[in-house]
Image 1 (tube, rainbow, N blue to C red):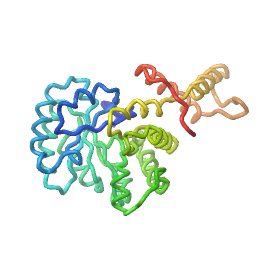
Image 2 (image 1 turned 180 degrees about the horizontal axis):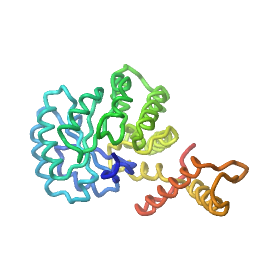
Image 3 (image 1 turned 135 degrees about the vertical axis):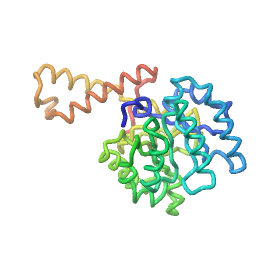
Image 4 (image 1 turned 90 degrees about the horizontal axis):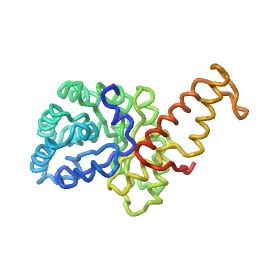
Length: 297
């Protein structure tokens, strides 16, 4: 269902901003993040939920049409005391141009189906998988109506299973692969990886984002504006990757189509698709003014 949601399909960085801090909305939207997640869940204390909804409703009316295509609203989970009121606000905002909602603790395709029916086809769904129950249901979640991309809640997932992961989160590699494969099986845009909690450790952020890219993710959740540029750059093609893609397409033209050999390796349709995707990503990066970097592979 990617037709009307191109900004979110292509987004590399999804930056959280608390719904009760409307003075931060403009900064979040102007800091280079491809998408901004306005958060009614973890970032807002229970006593502030009502005020946060009111503040968001007021602020959203002032967003530009372009801004609205990049905004995602994270509501509270189904079954919480705040879910129904969040949905009432969500319906109002969708009517004003909001394009997407993130559902935390996503564990049921039935809940996603109900959301899709209530919100209509103009609102994409981004299920956040952050529990064992969510992982068990991941294929059903990916195939639910109006789901655009899957996202991984790595910190909550660790808490749900009682894990004590090391800094490299090697224990979560099978979970990440499961999300990437579920997205691929369902024909979704590539999944969105979880957060790097330490905002003062750029090396950890670089490590985490390079791991995400190697694992098949194409985007990452961010919790601070200082993380955005590094994440955007890490998901951009390196100079070597760009040069390879250009040579592949040039050789394809010279060969007149069909299967051919380059650098001693056969090039067929899947390799051509990768080369073309690399060039598209490179043009997006150039338009954003982000330099390409070589990820740690």
